[in-house]
Image (cartoon, rainbow, N blue to C red; front, side):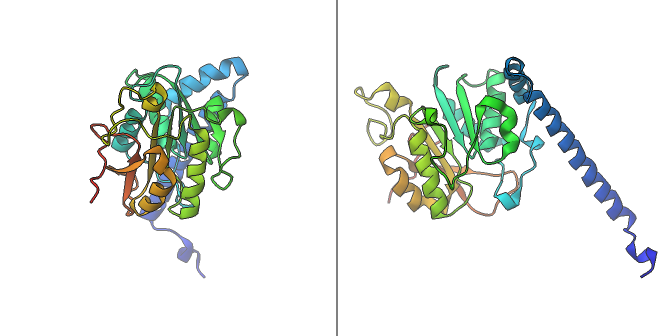
Length: 262
């Protein structure tokens, strides 16, 4: 074979070089963030806060083979705002397999656009360990392999199970139930508005499940006691997934309206 046969065209070579340059720049950026977050204990808190404010999901390339598909800007912001609407600074909010909402929340809180609270990410991708104490490794295959201190600890939970399978959805639901302070539906009428006897905990407890529409029966079965129902809000991804995704929640709002039952 002649050497000429092995040469790439000028346009192909230019595209390849541009791709490699972007990949190297992204990796360098990530390493800088990681190094900042791995400072000593006293400095790490400040570093994690500062680095989080600068982080966007563009710093994390989605791995489709690992079923990683980030939400688009509008979706991640809507989910973040709904999740923490009305929270207090002492409230605790968990994000399970939903790093794009976690990152969006960090930035919104930094800019004073949503109420401040304590948020925590449970995620399989160890790249997000750069958030230090706000990150815990999570594998849905071991739904309860988590620090005991988090049992019944969270006022609000958002989960996006990584796979559209009954096994994954079921195990993720087990995790959510274990993390949540309450598993009772909101006290009130069928509009989701709490009545006078509803406790603050029940009124404040919010559970949001983001997954495929075809998982509706599984979600209904696993979260029925928590009052979670399918809403009309559609989840959209930056990569433009063909699967139709929906938002399931145990409350209604201006954005989240439950689907009307036939």
